[in-house]
Length: 224
Length: 187
Image 1 (cartoon, rainbow over the protein chains, first blue to last red):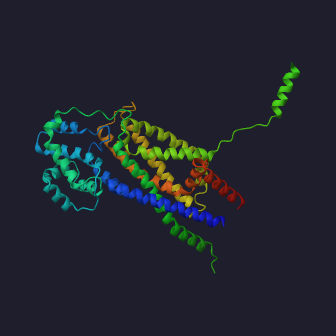
Image 2 (image 1 turned 120 degrees about the vertical axis):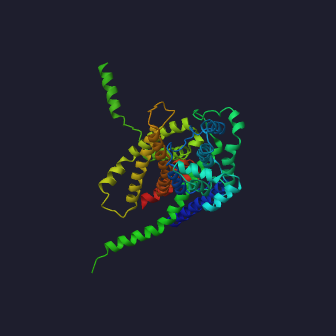
Image 3 (image 1 turned 180 degrees about the horizontal axis):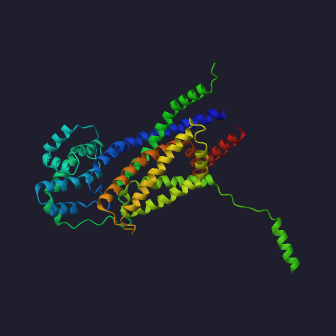
C-alpha cells in the first residue's frame, strides 16, 4: 500500500518535471535560446584558433567602440572586413534569434550575399585568421542568431562607421554590479538543460538498470 | 566557599551534556542548492558582468571545495573499493565526479589566471592568455553537461531532501516526509 502510494507520488513528480521541461523548452525555443551545448562547444573549439582567443564580456567592445577600433586599425578593405568579422561574431553569438535549423554553407552564403554582404572578403579575412565561414554557419545553426541579423551586423558595422565612431564609448562592463537582465534567458537555459538532462537520465536509467541487472545475474549464475 | 565551589562543580557534572548535533544532510542540501544556483548564474558572464563573474567564480571555487570536504568519506570509501563492484551506479558517479573535479579545477585556475578585475594582473603573454580563455570557456561549456548529469544522477536524493528541508514546514509535505522516514526505518 505504502509502496504503491510512493510509486504514485514519484510518477506524479516525474510528470510534473517532464511538463516543466516541455513548457520551459517551448518558451526557450520561442526566445531563440534553445541550443545544443555540444554544438556550441564545437563552435567554440572552431573559433579558438584565433590568436587572442575568445572575447570575454569585459573585453567585448561596445558597438561604438567596435566600429571605432575597426576604423582606426583598418587601412585596407580586407583588414576592415577582418575587424568587422572578428567583432561581429561575439555580437552575433550574443544576439537572440527567433529561428533555428540546419542550414548548409551554400544557403548561408547565398542568403548573406543577397543581403549585401561581401562574402569573398569576409571569407578571405576569416581564412587569414585560421577560420572559415563554417564558424558563421555554426553560429547560425546553433539558433542564436538569424541570417538576417548576421547580415545586418556584418553590413551595419561597415556602413555606420562614421556615425558610430562619433558616439561616446559605452560604460565599461568591469563595474561590479553590471547585471544585464536581458541575458536572463541564457540563465534560464542552463537551468532548463539540467532539468532536461534529469528527465533523460531517469528515462535511460530504466533499460540500463535492467541490462546491468541481467549482466549481474548472468555473472552470478552457476556454470554447469 | 570551598564547599560552595565543590557543590557547583558537582551540579555541573550531573547536568547532561547537550551538544547540538550538526545535521550534515541539511548542510549538504543548502550548500548544494547554493552551488547549483551559483553555477547556473556564473556560467553566463554576459549576465553578471566581468567583475561580479570573477568574484562569484572565486566564491564558487570555495563552495566547491567545501562540497568535496563534506563528501570526503564517500570519496575515500569509493576509492578504496572501486574495483570491487564495477557494475554499480556509484562507480559511474565516481568517474563523472572526477571529470567534474578536473574540469572545475581547470576552469577555476584558468579563470584566476585570466582575471582582469581581481587585481592579480599576472601579465601573461597574449597567446597564452588566448589559450587560457579558450580552455576556460570550453571547460565551462563541458561542465554544464557534467553538472547536469551529476544533478540528474542525484535526483532522488535532491527530491527527497529538498522536500524535507525546504518545504518540510508545510503541514502536508512535512507529514509525508515523516511518514516516508518512518516507513524506511520500519522496513
